[in-house]
Length: 269
Image 1 (cartoon, rainbow, N blue to C red):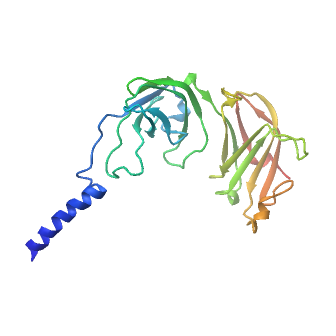
Image 2 (cartoon, one colour; image 1 turned 60 degrees about the vertical axis):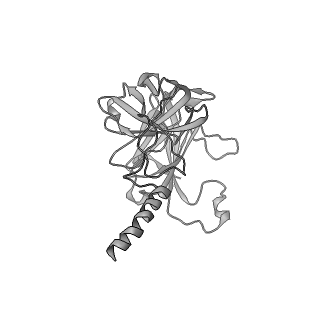
Image 3 (cartoon, helix red, strand yellow; image 1 turned 30 degrees about the horizontal axis):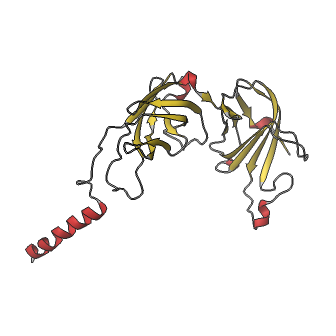
């Protein structure tokens, strides 16, 4: 009986491996990964992981067709990071196989990166943009000084009741009149350990440019207050949203694109 079961099971195992792929039989890389090396990264990012800020970047593959590349997130060490680059796998690819390494010759118009802590969650938003990055045989190198860099507005000492809730920052708050326009709205933030950091995208018009503003601006911070929206109409509000608590910070000093705000100096609206 044992021999009969073995005889029937072996072809079945092979068939399953052909259909879904088996780890021991899956294909390895057919080409080594390409690399993007970034040097001169400031000490404040040491040990943090670097990721594309977009999931995929389009290039030309060996068949002359458009393809996507993706990156393996890597930590900054001694002010440098070498990102490993692969062709992105299709959804129908063998799930046990490794992606092919990128070895193309392309000039990518812009590459956005972001940093996040290995001990924390993913940090949303762009930290830096490198323009016109040229790959030769899958290899490229850029310097931090040549990047367009984000600005940062950080609010600290937020009460624990807001942890995990959504937040928004309006830089250049001018009130609620019909003609008032906020200079820079920062959205999709989340309070974590009493802190939020909004990143100001490094672009003006059609040009990538570091945010280096120095001066004073009024800033409004909106924090989710935990109230539930009970209907579709509740998403339409006139004036300040009742589903957020609102705090105004007058004449916040921004220096070279950065500001640190103590939540305790805000005035609830």
